[in-house]
Image 1 (cartoon, helix red, strand yellow):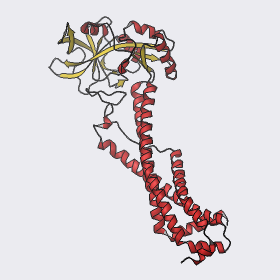
Image 2 (cartoon, one colour):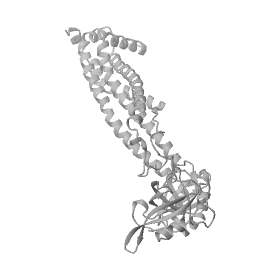
Image 3 (cartoon, one colour):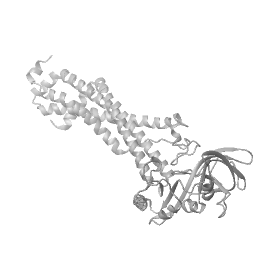
Length: 424
């Protein structure tokens, strides 16, 4: 019998048993729906987070930390401004910025307060490293040699204007005790909204000269060094050169490495969730097995007639397997459609449901985000469903259907025609 005729006969048998066909297909639909919705939502999360990280991390900025870095371990315990010269001399590095930061409370002339960060850095290095990104809402960089001037990061409700005095409350060590010291600065500039660049916060921060910062904290070291490179595609090679220059005593963080790490975590979570969702497909396969076995019993006499008319074993086998293929295709298509609709609906609901919580990103205690996450207002979740995922979903649905239909199909093909004709 021709394959076209076998498919036609299979389709006719399925239409004659609409309720059974619908119930059998339902299991495939639920399984594929779960897989597709999870895959689409995971793709949407990855795309959103990758975009946010790419914007916030600055792909052309490398971060150099003391050997143990934020993870602890061996290597240099501190960095100094002289270390920026070593990094600056490495081919591919265009500018360096060494800085230190600490928590502080800022008071303005009308006793308004703001809990924020105070960042000590060299303004010339800041301009060389981030001049392409920084924009002033008012004022500008302080004059060279001005140790009592500061720059204030973006605030929706600015705490001070250019020319105003602000007082920072700093916790410093005096001998074996810690005391709060108030230091006043003149505002020379107020930045427009910038966000964060890796570990350097721009918004809600107060920037003062590094010399002044080190004098206040009685320390000649710096927390970290940022290096702007000419070609982001060479980031790994330049990071290796920096590490070699310091005899592997520093930790160099490459933005792409952070993104790859985050994406790796998402990939593991996606595989775990897909494995759970695949249990529904396993249940659907068992359902197909049971229903196919019942179908063989009900159609025993029909099979006997077909064999008596000359139908071969492979024809009977092909007919049952073609029914399984049709069930897989139909269930897969409906599962993909319903799964996409479900994912799209959840994509609209999740930002609203977790508004101010999870969707706020990696937010610090002062409200400043890491890696570009600054709040939930710009969070959108658009499901991503590549064509290859659709193709794989349909193939998987067909494969599950065929695998669990092989035994009933072989049982039907091996029926003795004489016994089958006598079957009541």
